[in-house]
Image 1 (cartoon, rainbow, N blue to C red):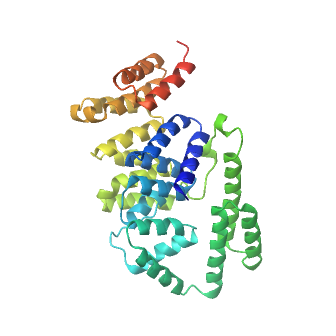
Image 2 (cartoon, helix red, strand yellow; image 1 turned 90 degrees about the horizontal axis):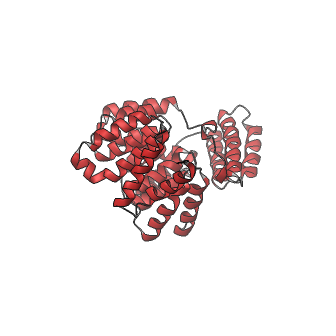
Image 3 (cartoon, one colour; image 1 turned 60 degrees about the vertical axis):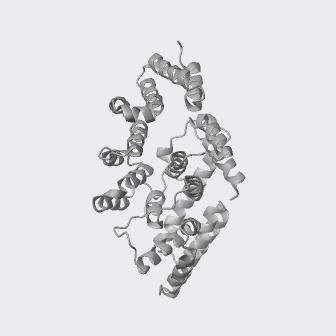
Length: 348
């Protein structure tokens, strides 16, 4: 996907989701200037990933604009909820990772991650190794056809996907994998219709009623929590993965024990999104008492405090905080946009 195409796509997605249009313009302006920060790139990627949309695009945004080169397993942990307890992976484990990505239609994501860590030659070797795996002819054939179905999903060719599924069901009538594909197809078609609806920009969407097979996966959640016990240095990444899966309480429990600035700022975000506004205000006020932290992140703290106050009915106080922010920093676009919207909503 070209740079301009990615830009148009992310702009459209942000505008199509209710209450997100106020950040689209700011992000696109930064995109043009090449000053999109790693944190903002990560936030956009996590937002798209959490909705179950455009995961390849999310990965591309994160790695192109985050300018970070984590090892592949760390990248998988952050974006695709793959969990391993070993930092140094054996060839067999890495081959299994490739096979999984292959069968799930994520070859492009894996290739992109590996290219970014300059290991594309190794990827070729692993691909050859995965092909040599003795899966049995019928299983191998099913794997091959499954990858074709995944390609149809990626290209949103749902009629072709339906045709391929029906054809395979003649040969594999008891395949649970094909039943899963049929369920995924119905989900993808519904989501596509929703995204392409003319009224989407003006109609609140209950995304909680639209669930993919990947959400609320007990085994994955358990694996993440177990990994946190053995790899404390990955706990921030694990909290992001849990947040991406909608497991806010578990993410909060991890973040509360972390002392890094990025963890503290992310905790505010998760608390607000889980609608724990009073707790958010209390936490923000505790951070404001730390003079060095407040000096670095004071505007962000005040901005989020205003959001919480508005949510609990303290409209005038929330407006006053935004006005104070803009008096100090008139170019704070998010505060300016939010203030304009609130002034229209609030009957002073």
